[in-house]
Length: 389
Image (cartoon, rainbow, N blue to C red):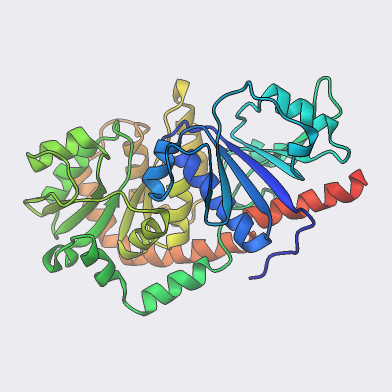
């Protein structure tokens, strides 16, 4: 799949880290993709280098400016720095409405050819997204216009983000049978690999203890692979030991193994290697869809349970959402009416896994047909550039 030639030479992407790894995870993927596939000089402004280093270990947490993977990483220290028009690139992107420094915005307005300015919004299947996608928002006092650009699940949105060679990489990985060797490299034993392999990435408030209890009583073995630090209290209660990479325990039908926190590229391989993936936030949620495997989504908690609306909107359009999948997703997010029978639910879901995997692969190709999010944004930006000139 080829990307269109870009008329833009430079781009700034601003990221304020709120959800530990999700925000920087998305922005880092986009920054690398823009540099590698579109030949754009990308400067990634990020306020939290420590979280960044957890998903990309080569990041220097003390550096003001550094080069990584063809991207200039700039530590965003605050809102009070001074900027000149010459500092401003062709395209400016703010992620999730993070507020740009006032002097930076003023410098944008001083640039002879104004930069294209976008606010990348959060992913949702709610119908209102389609009506707000690409809407302009003129600045209240400067001659600048910001455009809202939404990811989504159909052609009336920006689609989902994926690298041009991602599906080819996945197919090659699966065809070559690399999954066993990859998991073994993370410490997974041959016996653990025989069970139903589940990756677990969630927020601490997810009902992990209930899930673990259902797996202990499962009709067939389950191997749960959880990154170090995720769900610490519940995982340590199961292990009866501190949560450290390499720690493992088996109780009943459930084996839990703690994995090191892996770089983004290896996280994709983990998703490809498992039979079911529990994911959280937005970044791993999207990557789970590109894995072509069934998944359960833990949504970032919002006031007044607005995340329940977001979950239900997705389950309504997600083709592989069987009753068991939908019930588990709702219970995992506190949106299930009444009390879920966790054991019965898992027995149903585990029996459906072969059919769910086929449905998840069909969903993947349905999403690919909408085009890549960044390709779609740059096409829209190029049309705006023509109008601006």
